Length: 219
Image 1: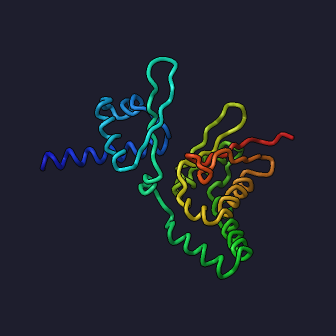
Image 2: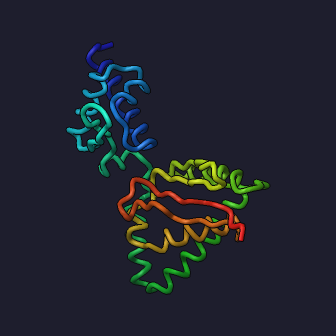
Image 3: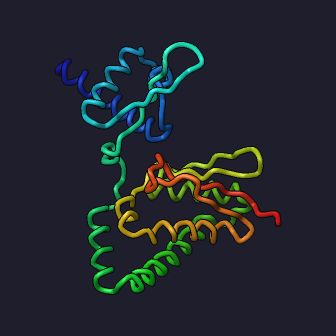
């Protein structure tokens, strides 16, 4: 096998792994990446610089108590092409066509039907899950299957963060904000009337991910 080709394949594989990790973690420094991939800082910087030249990553400097500021590397919007897109162009085209054919009121009715179907599907997946934590874990499973890269973080104070690191319908949601409104309503319905769900970070508002704070309403 050609040695240059083998080296190129290995570099491509490592860079894709770096992209996946940055998608999961957000801003990450070279030290953390070196530890994760068991590579030298110099090797990681070479991969990051190559990705930066392709417009896939950028960095911001974070001040540290001692020493020079640290570069935290993160993905640019151009890297979204490596993750599920949910047929974004077709979705946006269909949404615009529905608006033209049925008006906003007709589109709202269609979204209501979609939300009802999703609710039935999700309830089947949640099965006999009891309690907020178990329901969120099940919800994260199905959302991850759908491309949202979801996870749950227990905050230790009785509340949870439900985090979606990728939005496979982002372009469609930008064309139709009702999709996101219905999503919030869906989560509220699935988790029950005694659970409060609040969106605290939003991709369409410039956030790096969509984050929901979830807690039981004891009132």
